[in-house]
Length: 171
Image (cartoon, rainbow, N blue to C red; front, side, top):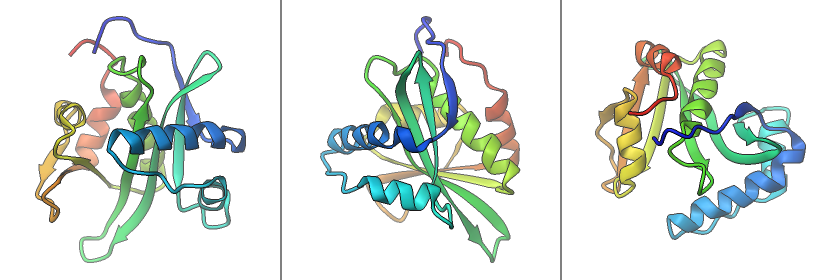
């Protein structure tokens, strides 16, 4: 991370944020040479609908959204774990490596722990060196993935608590 840290606040998504979050989802997909098929109705249904299966946090600098994190919760009955699966983390160009992804992750962890999650799962493309380095540096444990192109990272309760205590600083 560089020394110039942007003052950011992190909060849960609001309905008025949906167009901006969709735009960031499209940029993230383009970075991975993919196409985002997400539509406003998808976010409205899954993040604000009766089942609330998608949890989205946004990072805001001044009055601009500069990043987001999207997760869903699942239950692993055999292991008796409630898992927060982080599906997407994105920070806009120009705001990266200033601790914003860490802030998003910390809010997601705090909220998911309040909701009873005791494990966090993140997957990243093996070729995404920046993301893989970030997850390892903040304490995630690498787990074997059944997909060759993905790196899987797991954080149990103790690691989740450790990440919550991390400060935005030079690493």
